[in-house]
Length: 410
Ligand SMILES: Cc1cc2nc3c(=O)[nH]c(=O)nc-3n(C[C@H](O)[C@H](O)[C@H](O)COP(=O)(O)OP(=O)(O)OC[C@H]3O[C@@H](n4cnc5c(N)ncnc54)[C@H](O)[C@@H]3O)c2cc1C
Image 1: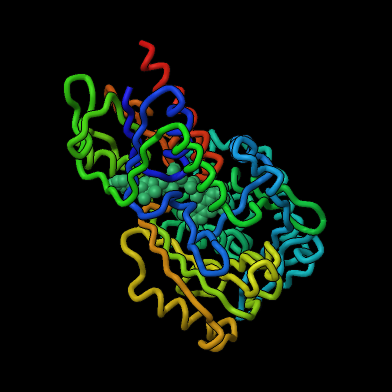
Image 2: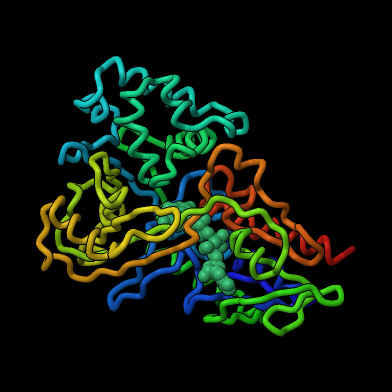
């Protein structure tokens, strides 16, 4: 069989890897580099993801893939730390002691919060798909704890759509992020960056004879005599890893659109640590971005010779106007940096940064094989519910490859 994979992100690359041993596979990728959301900037001295990335202790499919690529021994487990910027001050909120010292909640509220987190870890996300995270929190914790603790978190992940997000997302997030010891959360990062995984996958694919066409944005696909024609070339079937709405547009199939959001992320290098040793700072004060993530407070800065900072924001329709300048000037003022201390910066606007897990999302997810010969998998798949991740997209890619194999035997 000749299979066309649309999209060279993690889902497309893993699906292609699983199929290319026994089938002819062509990957068509719009961008000039592979990796999709996990692609990197190749700077003169090092490579760094254009969107912040770390992994979690339960990411078994990712670990297997790293092992297959001889990279697992380079996966490091590092201490992640978090904080809130409120009233122009960063409050560290990583360890139980720091949470106890947090002055904006009373002791009673902190005990309630602790019990809520413990309870949410064992809650069943399935039954919470129809409840908003906001209502779930307010009912159990009251307005004050919600607005001072969970609202900034929801805001940093979903921007203006925060009130629509389901409690299923929140409880699964709490359970993923609970791998904590007294010193903080354990987060995984691949020494040298995840670009090494993408490059290893590309080498493996090339070795199996897979054809990879970068800089090829697919514009049209239609069924033809039991197969599919994609941009003029005939294939026996297609795997599309694009959002359902993009696949529907390109392939003229009736797939219901899913709520998606975009991300605007400015990455910069600076000699200064702007967040006082904290990796992830959510903005509690109103700001044009939702979080400031100092990568070099997770991975030591001496590996890079400078600090690497992400200024991140999600948007629903179009990116904030002039966001490069707006982000930079707000960041410099708020975090006390001079403009000359920004050594370099790059902006990435990713229109398809992931689904918004609104209430009822579970019932909206499309079938993996909606019409004959067309298979779909990616951030919108069940494997990525109720939070998209590298793990989920690898699983989605591998699972769709299995479906294609079963279909090819029929
Ligand atoms: C800001 C951000 C931070 C994240 N942080 C983490 C993290 O810390 N940990 C974690 O586990 N996960 C994280 N993720 C999620 C993770 O990156 C994704 O789940 C995963 O990389 C998605 O892979 P994918 O292949 O499903 O989709 P994508 O990576 O979106 O791949 C789709 C590919 O299709 C290509 N494409 C689009 N249109 C066309 C077309 N018409 N023709 C051809 N090609 C096309 C795109 O260029 C892209 O390469 C993050 C995501 C974002 C956006």
